[in-house]
Length: 485
Picture 1 (cartoon, rainbow, N blue to C red):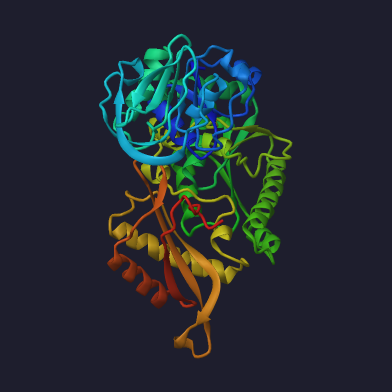
Picture 2: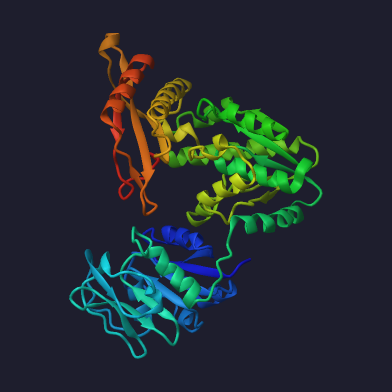
C-alpha cells in the first residue's frame, strides 16, 4: 500500500469531499472517526492526519494522537479541536459562517494561493499556545489560520474542499510539501496490485460475481475476469424489483465478455416476503434476507464455487452499508473494490475496457423499486412505476440532460386522489426526482426546464393509466436524501 493519509471525521459530512480531494492529489487516504485512539491510528502507520468536520466544537482528539508527532492539518470546526487539544484558548470562538477576505502569511501551506474572499467560520479571536503562530487572518486582522512549525501542525477555519479555487493547491501543499507524501496513488497501480491479491484469495476454486445491474458490480466482474479468467462465473438474482431494462443489460454484459451467467427468477419469493411491509427499513431487511437465502441456495447447487464477489465501494464502507449478501454466508466473500470511491470505480472500469453503457449506470438501491414504491409493494404498483420511470428517462435523454444529472427516477407515492377520467376511480401520484452534483461534490436537486416537466407530466398521465398526478421534488440534500428512504 502507498503512503497513507488518515482523515479524522468530526461529523457533518466534510470527510467525504476532503477524501476525494486527497485521492485527486494522488495520495491514498482512509477515513477514521474522530474518537479513534492513538493506538488504533498508529497501527495503520499513517504518514499524516487531516482533521475535518462540522460537529461538536467541544470534541477533541485523543491526546495520545498529538504524541504521535505526525503532520496534521485541521479544517473548519476541527481546527478548534486541534487547538484545544494543544492547549489553546477557543472559549471566545463564535461558530457561524460568513464570507470574508482571507490574507496569508508566508506559510508553505499557502504557497501559490491568492488572498481573496472565502467562506470562513471563525468570528472571534483564538488564544494561540506557545509554539503556535498566525498564518492567516481576515479583513479585521482576526487569526483564522495557525501553525506549529516544530510539529508540522496546521489549522484553518475555512474549507479548501468546498468551491475554493486554491483548495486543492492547499491540500497538495500539505500532503506533498509538508508531509512529504508522493503523488503515487493511481488506478493503474491499484489494478497492478489487485490482480495477485485476488488470485491469492480465490485460490483454485471458482468465484461467483454478483451482478446487480449497477456500475460497481460490472466493474467488479471485469476486474475478477482479468485476474481469474475461466474461474469466474456471474450470478444475477432477478428479484422483480428492477428497472425495466436491467435484466437485458446484465445479459449483454455477460455475453460481451464471454462470462457464464446464472439468472435466478425470485419474483414470487420477494413479493411474498414484502406482502404487508410498508416502511423503508423493513423493506431493506426483508429484501436482504431473501437475497442471502437465494444466493446461498443457488451457490450450493454450483459445483466448485467457494467464493462470492460483490462490488462494495469505499463509500459503502464509510457509510457502514455492508452488502446485503455478505452476512451469514458460508462462502468466502471478496470485495475487490472496497478501497475505491465511485469515480475511481468508473476510472478502473475504463481501464479494463468496460463499455460506457455499463459504466454510466445510475446508482440503484439494493431493495430496488421496493424503496421507490411508497407503502405496500404490489405487482400493479411496480408496473405503474416502471412505465412512468421509462417515460421520465426517455424525455431526459431526448433533452440531452442525462450527462448533467447524477440520478433521475420516479417514486410512486402511496396517496391516491380521484381521477375524473374514470368516474369514481382513484389514481396514484408519481414523484419525479432528479439530482446533480455541485462543484463541491454535494448532491442537489436539479431545476428541470418547465417545458420538459410539462411534457413528462402529460405523457405519464396520458400513457400510464392508474397515475393521475405528477409532482416534482426539489428538496436539497441538507434536508433530504436522494432516495425517498
